[in-house]
Image 1 (cartoon, rainbow, N blue to C red):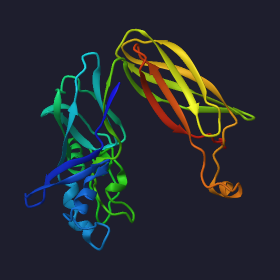
Image 2: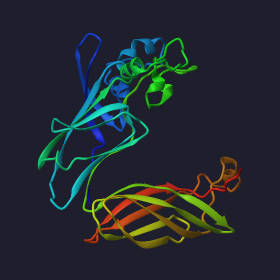
Image 3: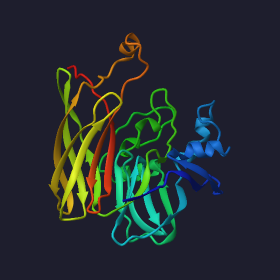
Image 4: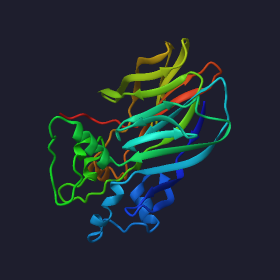
Length: 309
C-alpha cells in the first residue's frame, strides 16, 4: 500500500467583485475566508460591519491547486479520498475531470488510476458558490422550501448539505465559507480499501465486549486475513483474526472481542475528584493482510462509556 498525503499548502484563485483575479496560498485542511484574511485581502468579518463587506466571498467560485509526484505500479489501483469538502466541488487531475460532490458531510472517493502519470501531476478542485448553487436548486423546485430569514443571511441555504450556521442565524454572522476541513489522500492498494467500521459496547463487571461491523471494498475475488484489535495505555491489547472470502465490490463482516478493565469515560467533575486531567482514549485498529504480507489499515479513536437512558 502506498499513500500520498495532499494536506498542506495549495494555491487559491478566484475573482473579486470587480473581476480582478486573486491568488494566494491556502492551507488544507482549511477554508478560503481564512486564507484571504491572512493575506490581508479581506477584513475580519467578525469586526464591526465587515460581515456585509465580505459577503461576496461566499457568492464567488474558488479553485485550489497544487502538484505532487507519483510513481506508477501496475499491481496497484489508486484512489483519492476527500473528507469534509464544503460543498459543491469538481475534482480535476492533470486537467481531466475525475468526479464531483455536493455534500460537506460525506466522504468522497474516486478511482484515479487512469488519471495519474509518472512524475509531476497537477490536482485542482473547483468550488462553486454554495449560495449560487442553492439558488439554482430552488429555481427548479415546484414550490418554495421555507427557511428562517434574518437581517443578513444566505437564501436557500437549507438546500445545501453544509453547516447551516454558515448562512447566518440567530446572533451568528453570515460567512458562507468553503474549503476542505478533513483529509485528502491518494492510496494505491492491491486488494481494496476500508469504507467504514462501526463500534458498539456491552459490559459485565470489568469486562467490556467491543463489537461491530466492517465494510471493505475489495478489488479481488480471494480469501484474505483480517485482524481487529483494541489497544491503549492501561490495557492488554485485545485482538481477533478471521479469514474472509472476498468478492469484488463491498464486503461486510462482523467482529467481537473482549477488553478487560478499561478506563471508563468520566465527566469533568469525576476527573477532578479522581485527580485526573483527561480521559483515556483507546485505538481500534482494523487491518487486512495482503497477499505479499503488507497491511491495509483503518484506525479509529474510541472510549468506553456507561450508557444511561
